[in-house]
Length: 112
Image (cartoon, rainbow, N blue to C red; front, side):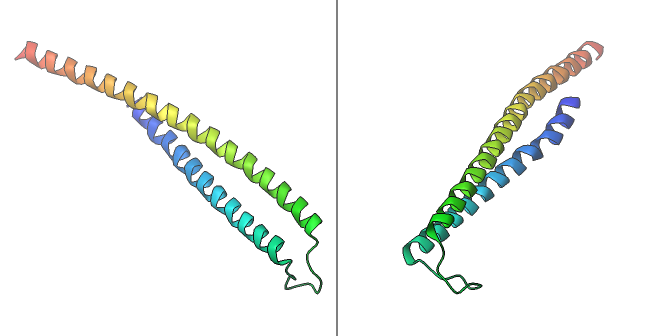
């Protein structure tokens, strides 16, 4: 029972890490698409009156992508760790459950 409780407590960490990883990857791709558009058209921002400085913008995008890559890697590590724990607990819990039920059947067999 303790293994099942721990597994049920640990499993949401895997789900949240997976969701965060997918969200960050999608957000990174969105930023890359926006960056490609700005590089191709040299657009003028809505709040400003002059074109975007591509050198500054490329530096900022590179910094943002580095941060996204670090966060995605962190999510992958948490996802792998949580999944390994859950996978091991599944087998341990199933094995212990099988042994416990077998012992109950054996006890019933002896008493009746």
